[in-house]
Length: 158
Image (cartoon, rainbow, N blue to C red):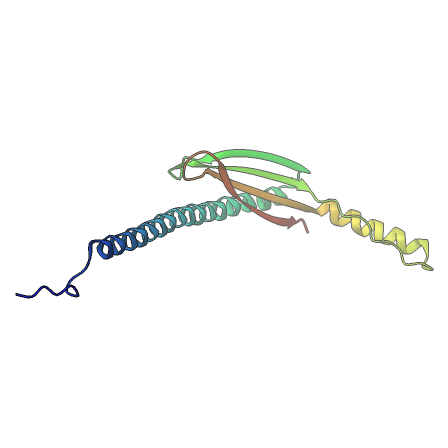
């Protein structure tokens, strides 16, 4: 029987193939891990967005009811968690503040009356406008940093 050296694989070829397979599998596992982390973060952001919408709707309803009663405070701060909604890891912070709008500059050659009108309009808008800023926060996946989303809107008293 004759021995043919061209049949089969050498040990070196098998080791190289296994090394390539190992590197490929590590890359795939790393991609999968990154994908899972990204998916978990997206889920947290999505939940925070829903909680922010819910809280903002309640806040705006409360502000509208306050306006109907003649209440329109210049500033307000409040904070809490979403324990009632069964999400104690999420917290919120609310800030309502008066919006200061500067009067626009009067074009050269125009009367001082126009400047007074601009100033009165800016002052009236400032008196009737409030900025409502809601921040929803949570701990990131490993619990070391805090992440959050900020929702800002304005409410005008007519």
